[in-house]
Length: 165
Length: 449
Image (tube, rainbow over all chains, first blue to last red):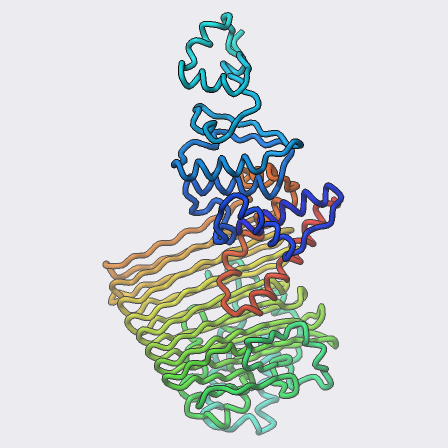
């Protein structure tokens, strides 16, 4: 199944449920071309089978394309930056930036500051043992990069890990 | 004298009646072939489940039905009746057969390269005697293809398609052979008999489509013999879309010369009971064949694909990919047998059969068989029967697709691996929309349940 076939089915399912008309092949192709440009991706991408023979970086870019086409109100991107070389990282980050709107939210899960060189977060939350233990603005991420996590652990009262009795 | 079962004697009587008319006696070479065949049929009868090759396909419903031999084209069949089966651009040449008989009015000719013959077998029987005498009935005689149905076909051989591509000629546009069945007045037996010959370096694409005009009961007993000379290339497609109350027994016997290439795409979507026999004899060094198949079944359909590849010479290659999608209480059989003879060193044979079961009631019997007598060969085979991957369903659902939509899309993806290999675009598109319609229908049924 090609990426285009899969995305067309998904878009039309979502449109149907939102009470909109389905897109025909031509309209969908137009939408897809526009989004491909937005995420700086090649046309050949869309005729390839979903996740078949994709490199790690291509899979991530494919996810960003899906994000662009499906336009969810909330996107959770879990370690979208792992295994990416610097060029792919920039493409992925630019994609996320361009898809930001006042009406949508994105939760980025990452272990590194690296991705945040390209994406400026509105909020930073630190999760520890399944709980948010510290929240702040973009400067929190910079502090973490400079000082590591240990100072936060020292700061917080002893918290039992989730699930521990 | 051995007593014969009434179903067999019915055909023997029909043969005697034909003999009585006198017309059947000439030409002598043909009469001999037919006579030998009826003798063989009297001995073999119809195959039974006691034969290993027919273990999972019981043809008792065929044996029990009193079919009338279709002896002429039903009069007055208008062109509109077959319009939905007709494919155009880039199909060069279309021969239409109704109940096994050539219909000149429904057929459509186009210019062909010099020396290429595309004609009805009935015509060729008098114009291309030497070639027919050499090949007709000679090849569909191996273990996989020489069963009682083939003998029955040969005994009554009268019409079908004849294609001859002379040495070095390339026919670039496909030749479409459309076999239409209609039996509004009761069960009919149609027995088209085809011979496709490509001489040294000849090249062609031939599509055989078997379709039913209405929801009739009939039996198509089709036999196609294919002869490829040195370096010849044939792309062959067989589309079986018979009425879902019909029976279909299709036998294709291929003999390949040195360095020749045979590509086969066999799609089965119709019929109540269908059996495809495809036998390939790789008779000379360097020959290669690639067989793909797809069967998509629902309701109580039963489709059986038997392939038999005989690696009889060194350095030959065979590839097989058969895929099946079964819903309802459908049943499929795949039996792929590859024999590598002792002298067939450097054989490269690969076979895969994958089945997707969409319902509890569907059932598949798959049996890959390898018989290797040579010692320096590369042979693999594999078979799989399973359901849709739940991870894949989840992936699609997480992107907004509903449960049934996700399953439909994945099923389509499974089938399209075979459909996308069809290089004749109008045929590919026709099948694609047929399968899409069937998926939509199944999805609607599941969603309203």
